[in-house]
Image (cartoon, rainbow, N blue to C red; front, side, top):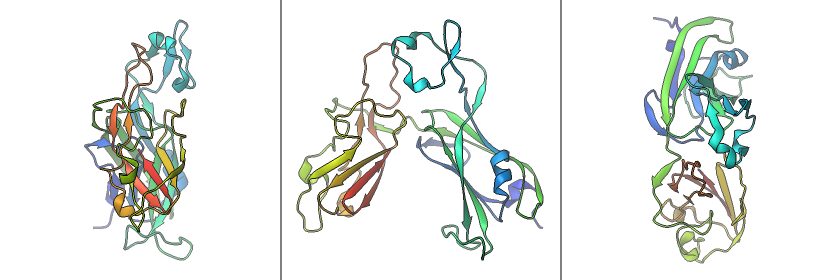
Length: 265
């Protein structure tokens, strides 16, 4: 029977309903079986998370940039209870082959399926349940697709994989001696030329999701492994009200491009 409702025209989505441990910087995706009206999708798709209204007293002044809250003000930090917040983010839409979900096509000259990609403005909060919602929407022919699709997932715990045995001296420590971090194709060692953030730097953005390191030679990708590259975090302050959400060794994705290593956390 031909599709008649919204759930029937969805091929796949990520994260799956009930997934746990989703990396804090992951995107939410939905693949449809046809071309969709993307402007309408921006109105009909939304993600719910915990309450995002943040206030500080006395006087309950709203914090427009809570990441910049001073440590002394943490004592007065409040959240309005019992409400859920809409996650802010950006949309990207891709035109996907009708036969291969991994192939993008030119929508001007090919039949295609729409893939919705939603990226939250800030990383997801650790160990929180989020719900993605899609209500009645339109395809490119103007056909209305009634119904509702919702799927919930739980974010990871700040990507903790192992609690630290000791505090690292540098946020960019490799966890291994320089000669074993990576190697070139001729087996020689490497020299780090630069990094972002800069080694030993402070006051980096709290929503940092990538570390890049530039070397003096091309990297051998086969030697750049999770066992050899370790990113370890620890609290930057001993303030009693400051709670660390990502202490330990972080899960990560390693991307090698010539002389550059990108670590996505």
